[in-house]
Length: 539
Image (cartoon, helix red, strand yellow):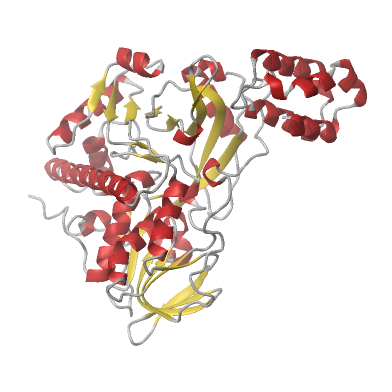
């Protein structure tokens, strides 16, 4: 706290102002005016308000940001405008990176059986599921452009959810959303075929998400990975009567597959969470939130001990197919020749595979609010048509001096923005203000509270909001040499672990698993105007 006041003074508060508001007295009492966990007492909060009112107009821009950061870190409030904070690194990446610039060997191997490009959730899962084959002699190498889990996997909301809620217009439940997309993509199909195809796709997505959640939890528990897991549930609150009907129909459809949700009335939502809901919601009890950065690093640390080789800060420059059927990969650290490549590259996929421009880069934005009273009881909450979500990361929870549970509130969503270069990021004041207004309605005590950090992350969206998982068959290449597992539409927690497993299975067996029919998941659905076999075969 004292260091924070020093930063404000250095950034431009005049000596006269310092004397007039008696900031030195505040300086000397700052530490004792914070509770054990750093939350400002009522007295210190009032002092912040006095300081802002009396001296705020004299602050230089740097002093204003330093003062806002001090208020944010102690859970205080401001009466004036709130700006984007200086802190831009994601919460997940605060602290020491255990795999920073990690290289399994000083020199990059020249050959491999499988090369995984990308060391995030999907790449880590693929390598994890390839590790048993490594013990039998399979040579597996993981390449990462930067450090592991520092792109989408270390810049997301830390959620895992059974149902991805991507939609076209008003959300009407998963089966109806699939039908809306299919009708737009294939207008020449009959209504009955569209209905049958949509229900089939909804069933496959639900089953996929169910396997993904089970596999993720199994890895965490069996491998004893410390990733701040909370599996208290994911509550999706409807925003309109139409959306509520869609969610109810969705719950009934899921029940036919043996997948069960709880339906909560608006009254129960208000009682259990404090969220002023006007419509019902569905609760997936096996879902929740976790620390994705810790999870990815924990998985990679284990499998590198089992023989999987990892090379961080090793960008792939290009690749080509050899006459003998291998893939020659050029990196900044050397060249590798391999039989198969798994592209676990999500928003960066088209930078290596230009034909996959259908996988488009979007930018998300997330903020943190400190010392907020936790009414969510470990749950993740989604509302505003699935575009706004909240959770309290487990590691930041505590009980205050009055016995109330508090923590750091993570808020994501608001407005995902398309971009051209996933390596470039730009925070948005517009998104910050939109999300703050919406958060004020759900957590009134946060009104006027500045965020301690705001960060952005790369996401990848596909036109049909379904991931790309399958072989990319290029002219002159062997049919099974290139495998893509990308395009998760902002729901990596729903898809990535199972996608990595399926990619690993494809790399070992050389064929497409039955769980991911090509008409729905193959990259070639975006490379031809005609439906792939599967939709047109329905009778």
